[in-house]
Length: 133
Image 1: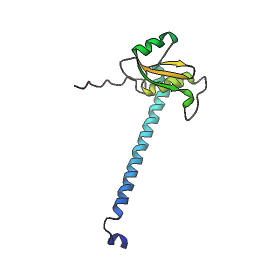
Image 2 (image 1 turned 60 degrees about the vertical axis):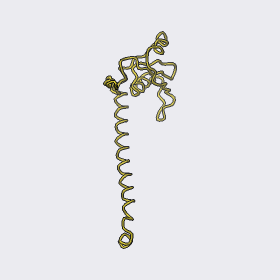
Image 3 (image 1 turned 90 degrees about the horizontal axis):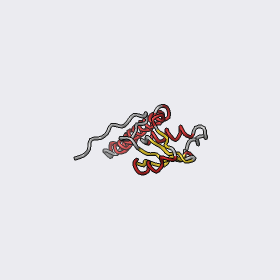
Image 4 (image 1 turned 120 degrees about the vertical axis):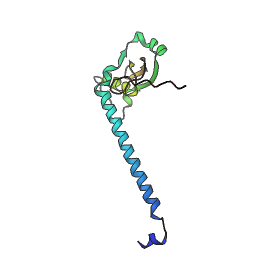
């Protein structure tokens, strides 16, 4: 390759860029696989650890529990759950976010952490982190 001989190091930046792109792609793929595994755990086992609060408990949740996020079933980009799937869908989304309690209002749910800490997608408690000094 005559052109590489005349200009030393010309091919190296492209090779380095290609290597970085390859490494980035592999890391992104591993992250996607882990997210899919966590979602599957939330759908199969974790959702059973999420408690559904009733109307009487709504104000208590807001005062004593940590609000996580509102989940709207109609915002699912893949497939909108049917009415029969709704409660399990909302519970699985809640545990995926780490919540242990939800309050359902029509097709949305407010998710809360009322226990000692957030949940893992499989429904177990996350280990508490030591306090910083």
